[in-house]
Length: 397
Figure 1 (spheres, rainbow, N blue to C red):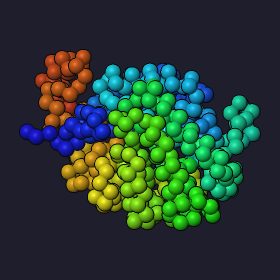
Figure 2 (figure 1 turned 90 degrees about the vertical axis):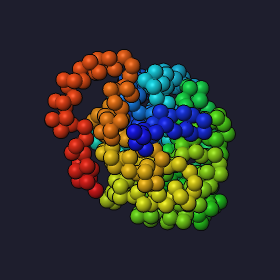
Figure 3 (figure 1 turned 60 degrees about the vertical axis):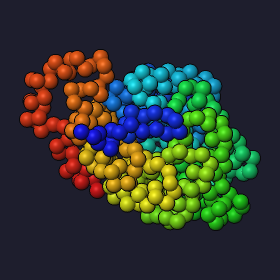
Figure 4 (figure 1 turned 180 degrees about the horizontal axis):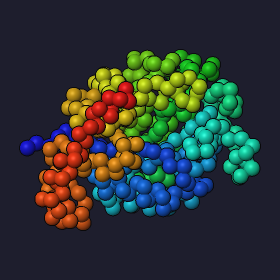
């Protein structure tokens, strides 16, 4: 029996991946001064043990002022390298490749953690030692009336910011990561330069599309030069721009083509996270990738780069279909992995593969194989192994 598409081995720029399942970057807001800790090691290593091929560390700031919250990870300082190196080692120990996403939130910086409200930092936050800091963006245009007015980066500021991306990439390499991703979606700094909604500049960094692309391409060039030639580079972009005043499809193709020419190997195609999405005050755009599968397929065909599908993917049959139908080459799960860290090995069983627990960690196999004659019939009778997840996914559209 041939393997399902989702579990066929793959490669990126020479990196061998055991299947097509990726754990999406998810911020944990658990760092202090940008430093990783035991929580990050435990949190991410369990996804590798669960069978994913590539596990990403959540968005990691290239500047302290680029953090979303005080709890964000960072790579703006050499002291942050060693703690992240231990995270990369833990991921690889579980059998997965270790990836890290670099980011800068621009005018969206300086927020409370989600469980503290996720609004702009204020006096009450400062009183407990987590006050606001000055934010930057392409234009002096705040996210909304509640958020501070950002400083519009001048030429020197842009040059320093691009250099910070390159320095972060070099530190990620020193930490031993296998894959690097640049976060250029969800209304963060690079996305702010790309979109006419947030970029009102009239110099060479704004205006027509060529000007608005300039910052993204400068970051891509700098990161690719700092990141080793044999290691893959991924780029997160959004498929939501056409809906909320950003780039139409032809502009998106020009953008992605320019990234390919600059050495980007994978398009992490987020199905939501537009420039006007939460918390900008307007209603959020649709976030289910199934809603944007046709757009992802068109982009993949037009640009000729592999696509990583992201957005409320729950059902392994739907995930496998995205690959078989040409909408994507890899599938990322995020919140579903929090609910079920073993989603990849469970999905493999649901798709008719992974007989006798062959893909589970070696130390687990004997125990599971010996119990299988009793446990597997009980589990099947209980309707486990994703029987109801298609309904759950449909309900999110």
